[in-house]
Image 1 (cartoon, one colour):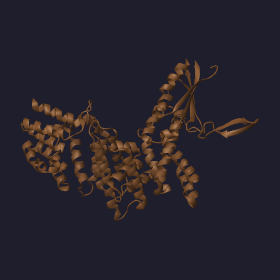
Image 2: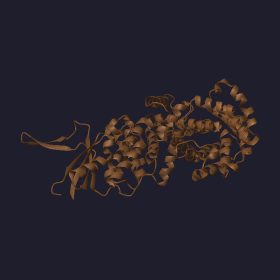
Image 3: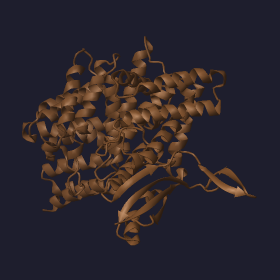
Image 4: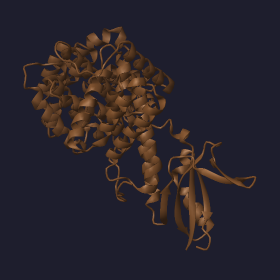
Length: 112
Length: 420
């Protein structure tokens, strides 16, 4: 079966109005999705903007990024198994992330 | 990283309760003027959980995780924002020490109960208005969001947010502290705390069927706060009386509404749906409430609730005792609502005609002319007397006074019975 990466971006400002009970409810929804059998792997990224390395006039330079100008940050990713892109998208659609204003990017892993 | 427990589920209201405790702890370390900073820190810790646990699993000790992470965030903020000036390193050292041993270590649990108790006494300080105290207690100790408090009080969020801002300003202006009351101050401060807790409970309890479940959460939060005070060494029999009364009444919450969302009157309730655990809690505190000689309003209310709880079914209910208790209650608190409840008991013991005579003075009070419960009781008494046409008129008047949907449906059912 093919493997896909689901990259979860979110905007921390979306969570500001939620109280403890709302957060717990959100967490329970996230956990319920995560426990489904199609999940192969999941990782959360460390809480920093990251670094991007590009060449400027032939010299490599590391900058903070890549998304420092946008409010959305890549928070973590899942690797899931799905028969097709359509099915992977369907799994992503069932994820509660969108309900809380987040974005999910779906990418197929090459050769899997 | 923390040990992963795939099967871990979160305890109900874990976030709310942990939020309250950690805010109490951090406020104690940072100082009461930084209660907002403590709240933001805890909010951030919960957000971290939300951003981490879906990928890494719920840690085995979720409460401990939140406690530790909140401390770490507080340390970062204190270092970064430098609001504490020369005291920064001292506060960081305290935060570091406090964050090292986490719940559910028994020592920490005990200290946290003390932190929460101090917070309760500060939030319920007599210098604050009742409304401010309730909103503040729910927010800082109960972990309720502004939106939830607004929903519970049918107020808008901006008004509640304003109320909280004002309350925090009052804390600063009046220089309220987290010191526990002692000496001559104790009785008044304790009374003030009990009043706020009882007010919070009644706000939730008076909510009718079909109303937002958040109102029931108010009852349970009031009960939790009451039990916290009752567990402290300063607890008096009066504290136990209040806890008994709240537990015994809260036990009936699951039976107050039927499957269709309609109101079920006490005597028609399915007693198997009463919460036995809460009844046991209620009787435990009831026993402790009668250790002294004091008889407060809470004692009498608790005794009424206990009499109901003791009856196996409505037929074995000791109405004579209930009437006596209402007589006592009326002597302590001569409110029309108590008088109305007493009239209902009177009808059971001496018949509807006696009760009609008892409510006559209430009916002459212009303030109560449009009180729907008075009209509803009048309707029922007339109905029991066989005066169905007058009963129907009273029920119609009660409906016209404006009441909640479930109340209206109940009155309409009574009205139909009059036509039969």
